[in-house]
Amino acid sequence: MIRHTMPTMVRRKQTWQTLGVALTIVLGISGMAYADPMSSATYQVDETFFGSGGELNASSPNYLAKQSAGELGVGSTSGTDYRAEAGFNTDRYPYLEFNVEGDNIDLGTLTPGTATTATAHFSVRSYLSSGYIVLTASEPPRNSTHLLNPLLTAAASNTSQEQFGINLVANTLPTTFGANPGQVPDTTFGFGQAAPGYNTPNLFRYVQFSPIAFSSRSTGETDYTISYLYNVTNATPGGSYHFNHVLVAIATF
Image (tube, rainbow, N blue to C red):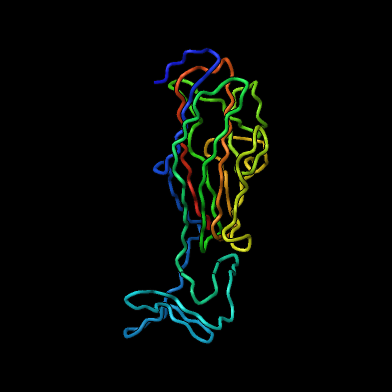
């Protein structure tokens, strides 16, 4: 426990833990259908294609590769009841990939009249789905009895008020920090976005269990930066504040 010796100062510690991340996959009511490979009692064809040629598993003791030549059609297609990926080297199994860069951040002593900021990072990609959402599941930072006041609607930093909030975009106030979602390798492959309420520069919000990021389609990797804002006042109770940030990624179909 950190002793609070000055009534105008409060000390808290933010902890960002990869072990706190929960990964949840939810299927829609209509379910998910897979294309069964063509087979009989004596053979099975895992994949079929039209083109000049290809090989799914070219290998030697030193390498393993997939090969294709002369593909006549590639890309995504979908309808009310289906979604498909065209191309030789495709997989018929959907997946959701969710990575968090774990870090422990000690913000030191927070002082009334001065905003404190921090950042953390995660990335998401999904395949053969209608997209995903990422929820923030943690309660705001607390000491034993007091929660820092969360911004339930998006608002700018105000050092005369107790505030806790986040967004997922680049900011210039109260300082230059954060970053916009980055698509890997570019915007023709990645489609993730910051969710409403968390997508406006210099405005911060925090509502437990609210969506903070999403994609409305299958997508390559999107890299996100979470920007954290903390403001305290003379009335903020002293003590050591902790925040274990838990994110939940949900695939949608």
